Length: 223
Image 1 (cartoon, helix red, strand yellow):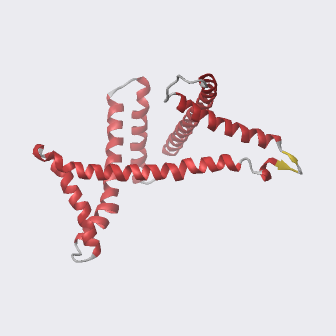
Image 2: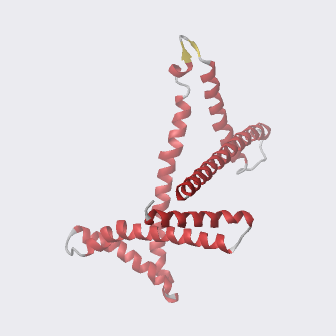
Image 3: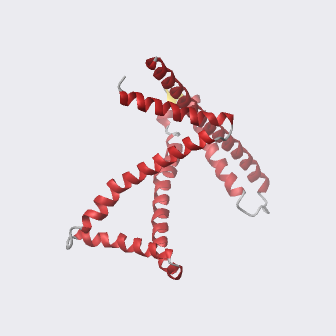
């Protein structure tokens, strides 16, 4: 084992033990390890932003006056200047335009991402589950596929009724039916949250096992 590998291994082992010390309660070693983790993450993010965003997309175009890239770069520069003016109490109004522009762009990206990346594929998946080619096998009905398709459709509809039921006026003649459907939707939401928790727990458990294996392998190589 080289000196570099030994140093990095001992440092990683020390940081791992410092983080694991949280089992004994909040202590100084855990805080130091947490601060190191946050500092390294922030430094790495800043380095990536500087080398991958600021220098190629802002600094380099400004070094080429008269080109289209130079004039396009003046727009974010102006927005950054207006945003920096918010540090001056009398110039707070100058930062409203870049903040509004940023909020609008983020909202548009989120809306397009949700509609095209989540909502539309899920709705198409529900519709595709009722494709006759998927519901038949050897010229007969595939009951397992049919039950899965119906369960998926019922889950989507009842969950939508659940959110609609909690955001509307409940004085209606069809209120008992909507309440029943929203109760079924609540069951599906509970199943989803339970599956999500199990997934997060299993991921964390796998990471823990992997780290313990690395510690055991490092100690065995060390001695």
